[in-house]
Amino acid sequence: MGLTADQLRESLDAIAALEPLIAAAVARVGYPEPRIREPGYETLLRTIVGQQVSVAAAASIWNKLAAGVGDLTQPDIVAAASDEALRAAGLSRQKASYAKSLAEEVSSGRLDLTALPADDEAAIAQLVRVKGIGRWSAEIYLLFAEGRRDIWPAGDLAVQIEVGRIMGHEERPSEKLTREIAEAWRPHRGAAAILAWHHYKADMAAI
Image 1 (cartoon, helix red, strand yellow):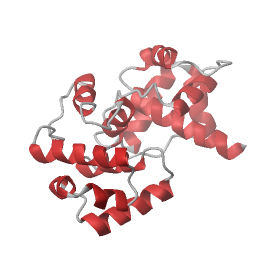
Image 2 (cartoon, one colour; image 1 turned 45 degrees about the horizontal axis):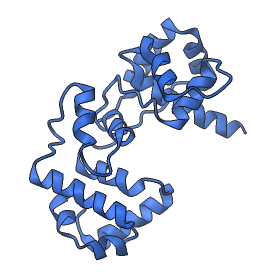
Image 3 (cartoon, helix red, strand yellow; image 1 turned 135 degrees about the vertical axis):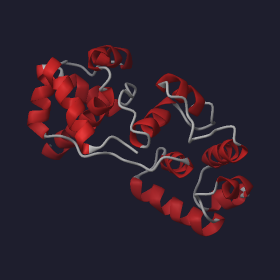
């Protein structure tokens, strides 16, 4: 499960003690709510379904998949589904191949989501071997579903934007710079990412 409210508060307080600008951001927008997903196959499948579509569209496709294919919590059911059935539910040809790839990796046992490596980079490397799971998707899974405290999705656009704003940069920092800025925040960078998304939403609400 993802980081709890207490864990977020503890981690952000630790970073704030080192970085006054983070302390000011927390004072400005408050502590973020937890972002928690169930660990396992279904959450990764939902990630694939939701790539590059709205939340509403993803929900519609998911419901059509469930109606047309069956129990989406069972990877062998998706692995056995025809491409036509997956496409009829609204998946693109590419996403249908990604969904089947994930299902086959899990149902075959090649990917065991109950026993990912404890080392974050090793776990990311194992996840990105699945077609359709990139580094960002792997990081989001490890942060939201496994609650790994030092995951830092520096390639996320909103994280880059808000880290730049919080830290007083005139331009959005690159992924490399965003990664460098957060080095001092180890081992609490996961909470910093969740704060960045919370800060981003607060900025958008104020416009």
